[in-house]
Image 1 (tube, rainbow, N blue to C red):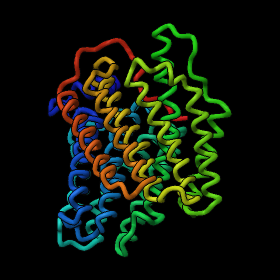
Image 2: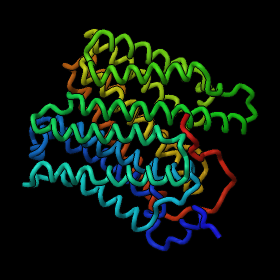
Image 3: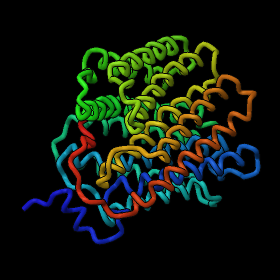
Length: 407
């Protein structure tokens, strides 16, 4: 008899933290997001020295994109791929091994270790190599060819990290094309995955409430937004300061806002677990518009990238982690007061970072943004510690939380 995913999880007798991929990576990722910002703020003021291999700005960029964001992506794919392929999830000691590789990467790129740069790079890349192997193995074995674009985008993300380590030897890697390649790949991945789960989860919730106005199915506006977004991100990687790039990014931002308007976001106001997803996608669209603004001199390029980092990635990953953790541990898909405050704090951090991008002389906004970010992710870690480290609660009726095929 074939073993099911549920049986595999139930057969695991070790720590609950290792019973499913989202548990360790979502928890450690949130802790790291807060801790890395706690380190960064004094590092920015010169009170803490950066590790030997990075400048302060490079370390900050690396810790957020390849540290926190990578943990969120790892937790997502290790949880979603079994739903996509029908194969068993990675659990138990193999999952502990992947978790250890992530910790190794954080230690190697943060501690003042007297090691050659290629050794630090190899330690940092170890998790990504293992994840790529797992992703490709599962998709090929499950003949789930539709999800090969996910592997392709993740491969570009990892390629950008390789280039980042090479460029960090000369400093200013955070401003170079390796970092932009990884950021662009992650933004594209968010438009693919977000475009599937946000209208799907919204539709399920509205149907249960008896609503008749439902999100529009995948159509030409969605395909136009994805195509324009892909073109804009390619231009962003190759020539971020070009006027043509600004024009394409402006069109992409508008296209994604039109796409978002078709998903009935206004009807989700009573449920924070849903409106946070819509708001997160809005940040992705605003990120395109911010890159366009930087291309015509209205915003510093680093500020525009932070709209995607703090707004798009920060808000969307926190939204997905919150919902997936509840759904996959058998809990009701609703946000309490504490989680709603966390959502407000992460959006406050993004707004304040945008204000600093528009008015870089206002240093208080930068520190306030960092403080709100720490409070948001620290709050998530505190609220979800018992959920992610404890056993699954009793079974309940299906809630439509499963992550379906990206489209």
